[in-house]
Image (cartoon, rainbow, N blue to C red):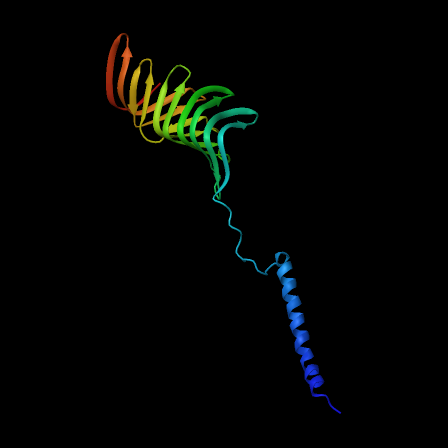
Length: 205
């Protein structure tokens, strides 16, 4: 005696078991996909943000060999991805030191500092003040801490109690206390009289 219904159900068991196994496998992958290396994730490397460090109203001090090289107060400080330069914007109350003694005050729109070369690239409305009231104005300059040398990028205006001169560029050595101006024009006070000069290839102070 054969039961047709029982035969039909018996033939369907392999399909039911296969469906159950597939469902269990799908649930297992769903809950464990975060632990699997290639399941449900993008194979591309993670995308890091463009700015990896951001500070506001920061006071930064550069020190080498226990000696203070410079100190700056900036509105923002940023370090960008794939860059060694630290960018400081709206710089005020800046100081450049020689043998830990402040010799110059700096104001600038932007300063980019490379800690590996100890070189500072200054741009924007750059203004430098000396200890005797001298003022140097230039659209940009580069300061090398290793050589204690400042050189301007573009024209420069130098003002002191003796007068005012403009030049195509300036080179200042803090170690030897020597300043060179190239292609100078201006007016200088000499023994109560004003002397105007120009077209000089270079002048030295």
